[in-house]
Length: 624
Image (cartoon, rainbow, N blue to C red):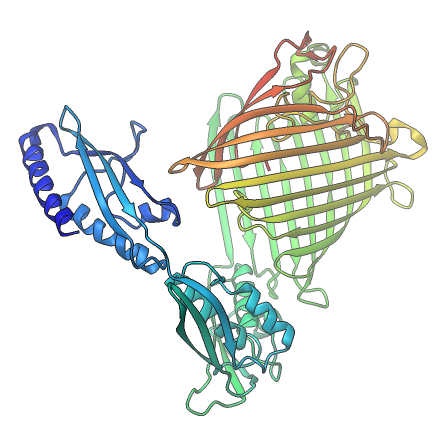
């Protein structure tokens, strides 16, 4: 190791002389940084721990420059990084800093000998018998430290914290957990956690401070714990999250006031809030080549008439669309879990080829079971009237635009009232809805129009969608989506279903080998008409490339059928392709190239026979 250090000093001295000689041309950039011999730790985590970093290869990306002092310190950091992860014998066997001919870039290669790690023989817990046996078993299976894995110091700290939090989440606020280890063989250690639970405690007096215009009762009904209930920090955290979710407070904190010297069985709690502005007005004025002048005004009140009621009003105007929308939410209906929301609108869209008027609203009764699960029942009453010019009906280039707006491209005037009752169930365990890496999402929607409800239409509609995300190793994510739905008109009459409810597939988020609305039953002339049954699925393998840039490989399949609740698995459309993702604050910007495995015979696109078997899609956000 001493020889390697001496060699380092000599080499870096030469490199410094070369750098000084070409200083007028600029500092020496780091073209690449590679590690050889890294097999048992995460290379990305290792690279992120160092000050020496590779610069971006994108011309406008950030450049990194070589610093000999930082590089020498990084060699020590690498060995410390390995020690923290259970590899006490890891060392730098050699390194190479290769200066290019122009003497303005270097390629850095660090060769690492990892050695054998100290492994966890097993993890034993004592003093946890105050918990139910099932809780103790759950604790053992969820500890970050695992048997036969390297003894990672960070995971050891997390293991102790996990054990301590389990006690504090089950009524023992004064609990203490000591961790020790003992050798059980060469490079093998047993981890022992000794718990001192202390007395079982309950919530005491709940003191609320800082509220002004928001009633104290509003805060108390958001708390998921009450005086005399078993003490748990978990419910304190959940209550604090709910207070922030009300959008009433700039600051919300819940703290326990236990006295570690006395260890009382009654733990008082203090809730402190700082109210923010309850009313907000947002405006927007602009000009567009299509819209011409446009204006927008939005008013929100998050404590309307007190009680944390939320009211909103929005008005928009442009040459293309104008109207007003309003919404009102009653957050407490008999229970903090139950809320009532009303949405109403009077809206007009005016284009050169069509006009559409919408008047009506929706009423939702929503039950939020927990942070992940909710369901709602809704009443829908909307009147719609549209008129399409004869020129637009005969010009097939307008077809997709009309369908996107829910307009029937076969008729000049369509009008009617949708009166329906709906049901929705949602469960979401994903870590990030915009770019999920793990967890699942499940949605079910049902809707019945007509019968006991008023309106011009009479139909049943149902849809179910499931998505799940599974990490594959440290880099990849496998994502899967399945979506199935159907419509059934009363008495088998298509006229009992409004056209905007008909089902289509194809586009940026479904079966990406086709364009939007191109996958559906066709008319006799080859135009998509929409169907009454739909099955759609997609599989993606997502992987990082460099920095915020990533890639996917996808396989999409599905179809739409004309008859209600009819699914022909032997008649599916398939598309495959690659895609690129670039992470932005509002989700990944993406580009996908989809290729049709089995094209649709006789399909017309913009009035012409389909000529391409591929489509390119640009969008923001993952496809699912």
